[in-house]
Image (tube, rainbow, N blue to C red; front, side):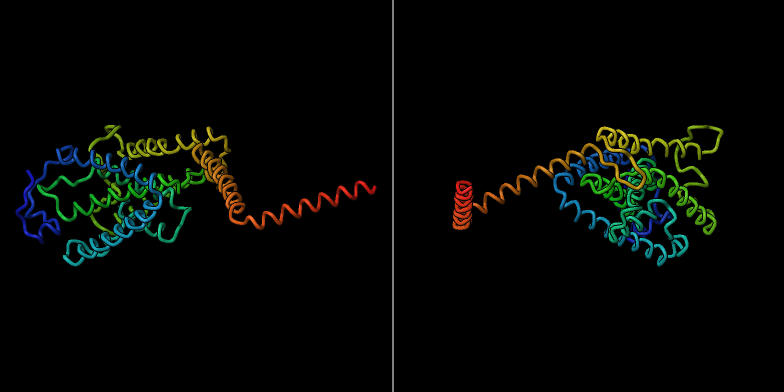
Length: 309
């Protein structure tokens, strides 16, 4: 059961001494949140695909919200004495993405964007599935802020895919796992600086299961990473082959949709030029008469020259 009677301060900082134990994973709230996230992402994809201009403004708005609210949370944790400045630094994957993803969007950094969008999407989805929002008997400010963050991170990724503003290249396929290892190294530094920390869950498993009992849990992480990357790489390769475009390092994968889109753009351009010419003919009849008169004069001159010869 979830209760409402608790002081604002305890709710704000998620005071574990006041809050009771929650229902845990796969409770009613957990299942409802997973269903909500799935429906939200599917709905947003079709909405952004239909209204691309709105999607661009939505991406900016979401990135501003993510950055501002996350900074507020960090200041709150330090000001109330819950954490030190070192402890609130971005060492977790989604915490890192809450800074680097908005910065990439604001400064239009396209090269690292595919990797960060991939991390943001899978990080947000996996946190919804295995997150710890259910350990207390009520949703605190920290829980709500985290739920919104892990909803918006994959939503930003979905928006970029819907408006076709991101392409996976061969170079991206190489960079994505390498960057993930580098981020894990950054999290390992955080685990050294903060005693007892488990950033990015690389000291102890953050999953409620182990695919290889009796063996290191990192093998489970590797399998999940392979499945996640395959779900992105295989469709990209299939689309690339169907579009009959060679996959080259440093060049975007032009898939079937991009190929069709290019043809449609060319057809639209032709139609626009034809319409423009038709309008010009209607708008300037005097000009058209002069052109016709000039053509007739030239024809008569040519005919006369032919007769003289």
